[in-house]
Length: 222
Ligand code: C5P
Image (cartoon, rainbow, N blue to C red; front, side):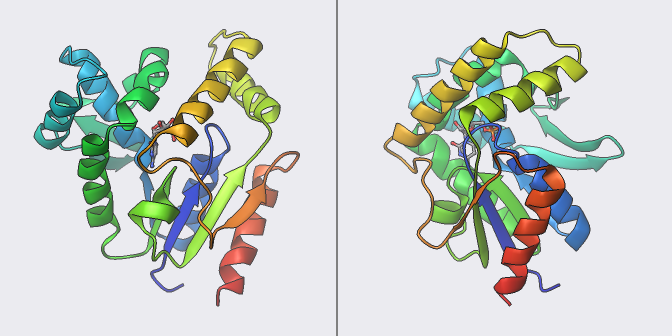
């Protein structure tokens, strides 16, 4: 397999990270979860009491605290400001604020630069909202992964139950729909399908079927 770049974008909980990890494993590529980077800045803002509306201070945080990914037997770990924040960035307080933080131009400029550095050598699967349009517009393969909001909420609800987290289905659905709205209506790099991206609607599909479909798209690109 050539060391190509694969960009996977799509709305919240569309299964991007699950399939991106499987693809990266099977091609021996590096997986970069850009959502984790916006979540890390949001976590740091809470930790250092920076307002989510303060673009300058948030950009300063982004410059000051590099985000590091490390592979472990438990999967990919995320570190910043001297601590393992892998679990903390998935907590509801971070999820509720991340779309506000990620809408700031200066925050995005810093993180996009870091994401391009990570992708420099190729052999990468990167997922997010603006990978195909802004971060890696030259990516050889671009996938836009969607699913109905009901199905995405259902998947998240099941995942939560398996982890022992009790959260109402309707609340999950509302939170997902709100994040999608904010991410696709912001001024800077909104969530939008790149003109040359392949749309994959995963509603009613299993993870295996989605992976097979994306591998077909990759093969078709030669
Ligand atoms: O992918 P995940 O759902 O973890 O992303 C969290 C949030 O980070 C998104 O809702 C969005 O606000 C932001 N994000 C972004 N651009 C990316 C990846 C994530 O704005 N490339």
